[in-house]
Length: 347
Image (cartoon, rainbow, N blue to C red; front, side):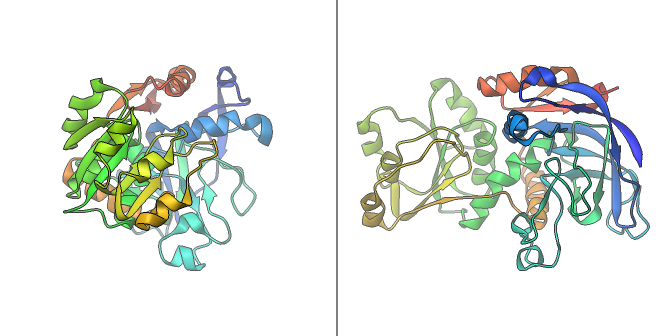
């Protein structure tokens, strides 16, 4: 076992964050030990901290981890000391079920092991990336291409794959006309991926102030929809709509925007009940769906695509002591667009 420094939350109030020490397992033959340089802050981190009062289990959040290989086990072949690597949402799965065998570890029948929530199959507690180092099985370690900045790559390990996966799943590419709802932590990355895939991208936003930046990210148009006439003007325009917001929408209004056989896909998840009229879907044979994150192979594909096509999350760097205020700013939608923790500040 190795003792390392970490930032732990013991309660659902952000003031409960405190510096502590945690134990990382000794290196197994197929393990990679990573010196963590950066860790992104995701809304999922906040959600888990807010649920501590229900789970009665302190946690070290963080699942957008980038760093440098510190040591490797004897059977490791893909990585060596000094390599630039990342770890996303998962650190283990059975490796044997139909989903693991087809690169969809997120749906592992035995239950995929989260990087920071719950326990591994052997009963050991999982601790996330708000820490100095982490030990991960080789097959869950991702290579960070040299052309990607390590800090900027961190949000790609969750926000990146969350938006890339549905675009690939639904064949978005040249000739596709798509709309992206929201230009926040997910949306600004989705715009870049969709445009680099060759799609014509319209952003459906709420602030005129973001229009110029949307165009810089690759959007061909920017629309603000407030009145019924606005929705009518854009009716039957889009093959695919990606909702990156976590608010309740009037889905019937957005279904009007789809073409025949169009798809409305959620990656921003609201706790509110979503409602729509089935007849609106029937008239154009539309689909309403959601998208999970991608498996390890697709996540590596996404990183390679981002490197080749200059897809870069826009980040704001914070120190370890700034995490509580960063959480509050995220909840206030006051971040431009993803926070990344400089882990060198954890001393």
